Image (cartoon, rainbow, N blue to C red; front, side, top):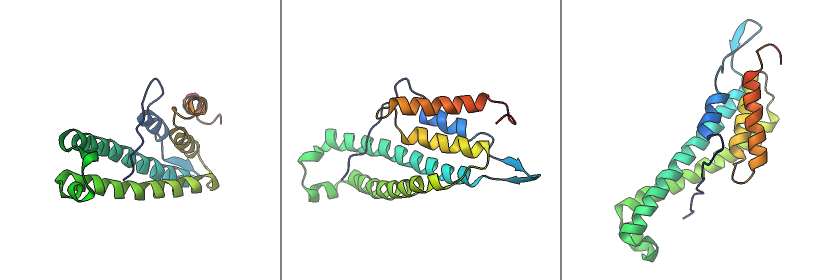
Length: 160
């Protein structure tokens, strides 16, 4: 069973704020027609998958903490672990996380080949990059991308 990676949030912009900033004004006007930039759609998929994985990692940690403190989880045999009702949810989360990580990796691999056709598409790609580069592992790169997102929001439409 894998141990999901826990992240501290510190003074860096939250993943939620990056997501919110990047997904405003998702509909853009092009040639008089409303359309959605395919980058926005793909990035929304990646961000949603990532958010679900983070939520499940938090739940996994709570269940594991409970099992460790109440049932001495790491001293139990596999058979004893399987007999605990809370363990089934842990196993289910583990399976779902594996699927989500594969989906997220496949989407991340695909994103560089997609061309952003709007400011929203560009912002969505930057949001994915900011979230994918955790501040704990890549503080300078993460902060640079977050600052680009802030700058992009401040530039009036039509000037870029």
